[in-house]
Image 1: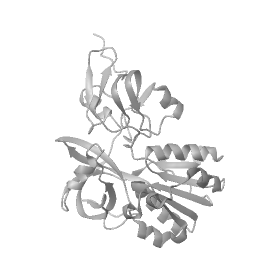
Image 2: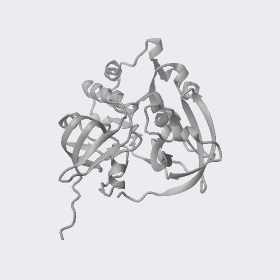
Image 3: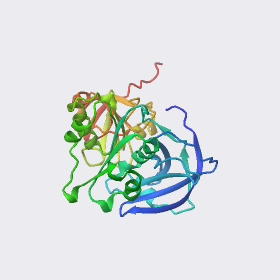
Length: 326
């Protein structure tokens, strides 16, 4: 069960490879007016994985265009199948997508902005950079990549930002030092971040360590990156003999709901916490991939966000769903 979502048919207009592992998709909804959407917006796309209908969320790239909506997808071997499906599509393919929506709140009244992107995390950050540059804001973008050859939109960003673009390429020995970066950022600055979960955790610790208020670090998440490899695990339901297998290409939320054990949800990105359920026992290890719970809450392993978090081994949960009394 979830809140109402507006879906519409669309066509994949074209694709282009931005790097060996990143492909851009231009998608045009059937009823499309080119209207502007908020910075940090994403769309959900209906995909098919192993013959099963699934939903994947992708950030929109840049500002609105009359040509359609742009997303960029990194082909990942350690994925749940969404990137493989998207990369299999050819121009002309028909898709079902949702209306653009954003959970990234930007305070446009700040004097200083620090943008941080890790790899494919550049997708929502590009639009923020465009909007801030147009406003003449004091903005710097720090782009962490393994190599410049793997950096999507690098030429566009360089042309737009000039020396306000700082590339941290690992193969050049220029790894990003978040502690040093945030120590140099003005105290009233707003930081916008998108990157892998480990990088986000490091960013939050560095931001607080530099004396900045945590609400001034805003972020967009992947909703899929974690500290453990994506693998099959098992879920037992408290007070029953039911044990479910969660395959690597499906989420615990989807399996529970498909099996009739209803869990409410909304964002499916590990951000809202609506799908959080109680953890009764852990025979293995939980990989918390959400940004809803604090570090202390994650360490306690008392709850899990069923939409994105995973596990190794078997966990016992309580969905709080009870049979009606006879």
